[in-house]
Length: 436
Image 1 (cartoon, helix red, strand yellow):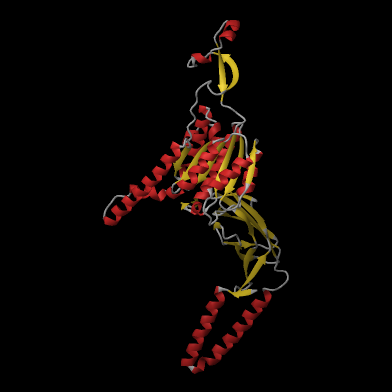
Image 2 (cartoon, helix red, strand yellow; image 1 turned 120 degrees about the vertical axis):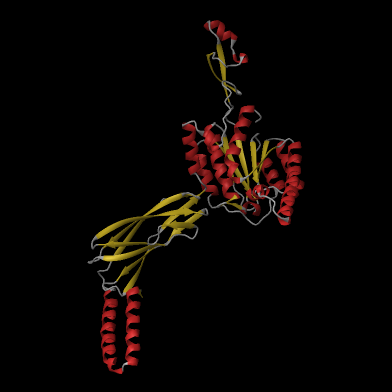
C-alpha cells in the first residue's frame, strides 16, 4: 500500500491557496486549473511508479534467542536495497509489547544494490516466549509525494528468562574477590568446617584443635587437619506463585526478584557441591527434583521462564504435605512468599510439618513502600495517621515472625532489592555452622 507523504500535503495546501485566490480574482482561474491538472498528473505518475517491480527491499534481523529480564540488549538489522535507485527509508521493527525499545524508527539513505546495518536497544519487562513479527519499512517515492509501506515477514522467536546475567556478575566478583560489593559476606574460618579435606603444615591462626598429633609425630613438624564445608547436601526452593507476589518495587515484581535470587543462589549452591531442586505452589505446580551439576541452572530457567503469579492465595499446608510425600531425604527448604499476619494459622502448622524432617528457612518479601513511609517526615495529621498505621502493621508482622522463630524455623524479612545477597549470606552461614 502507499500513503501520502508530507510533500503531497504541502502541494495540496498550495492548490487550495490558489483556489482561494481564484475565487477572489476570477481571471486567475485558468492558472489554478492548469496547475491543478499538472500536479494531479505528476502525483498520480509518482504513485504508479512506486509499484514498479524493481523496488525491492529485504531485511535480516539478528537478536539473541535468550534474553535476561530487565537487562538491555541490542538488536541488529541489515536492510538490503535490491532496487535500481537510491532511496530514503524509514525503518520500524515490530517488537513484542512486553519489550521496550530505544532507537526506533531509524531513517537511512540507501544506494541501489547496497545494504545498511543498523541497531537499536531492547529491554524486556516481562518473561515468557515472544515473537518479533515483521520489519516495516517506509520508502519515499521518486518525487517524494508518496510513501510505500513494506511489511517484510522477518520472524524471530525469543525467550525472556529471569536475570541470568547476575550469575555471570557473581562469578566475576568471586574471581576478583569482590563479593562484598554485592553485599555478600564470606566468613572464612580457615581450616574449619564439617568434612575432612586434607593434612597440611600448621599455620599461624589455626586452632589447636586442628593439630593432628600422630601426623606431627611422624613428620617431626606440626601438622594440622583442614576441613571444608559439607558437600552433597540438598537445597529445595518452594516458590509462592500467588497473587501477593505480583506486587512491584521499581520495574520488577516481587516474583521476578525472587526468580533472580533463586538463580543466583542455585549457582552458588551448585558450586559448593550441593544439589538444587525447585517446587512451585499457588497456581502452576512445577517440580524439579534436587540434582547436582551446572546444567541444573538451565533446567530451572526453562521451567520458570514463562511462569507468572496467579490470582490464587497460598495453601501452605498443601505444599508442605506434598513435599513430605515427594522428598524423603533431609534438605534445606527455602520457602519464599509474601507473608501477612493472617497467614499464621495456616503457615505455622505447615512449617512445623516440614521441620520434622528438614531444615526450613522462611523468606518473606517486604514492600519497599513500607520503609519509605517510615523515613518520610511527619508534616500533618494524614502523615501521622499513615505512619502510625504502618507501625501497627509492622508490629503484627513482627508477632507472626516471633511465632515462627519460636517454632525453631529460620526466617528472613527482606525488601526485594536485598533478597539475593541476603539469601546467599544465610545459605553460607547455614553451611558454615553445620546446621544442615
